Length: 167
Image (cartoon, rainbow, N blue to C red):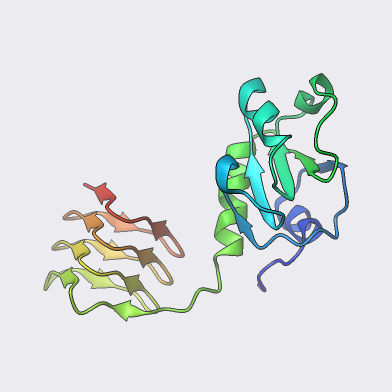
């Protein structure tokens, strides 16, 4: 599957309902509310985060159904998608949008134990540790300083952020 380029393509893949805005808006990444720009997607699950998101610089926001009706006015340049589980929709969108990042292999300062299993196209960042009998799935990224403990299984196309430890 090709990487989605627009909000409409994301909705076609993930479902949800576009309640305001254009499906042609380019969406290049997901972001936190405070760092979002005009090509980013954000999400909100409650009234407080929705109020903040609706006045952010984001291109689009995914909300629970009916949450938008309680707000007026808001930044009308923001497209609004309704989904029953905005957090899950957002996570799936992030996975789709990050899909084409090229593999960088294993950084020379990373430690991969002798009995760890790395699938194809993984990226292991500087100082990361992959312990014995841990498995990292195809296309996954383990960022700098992350620790994947013994017997941990990381799925395909996962992204483990810097300094995260999973036991």
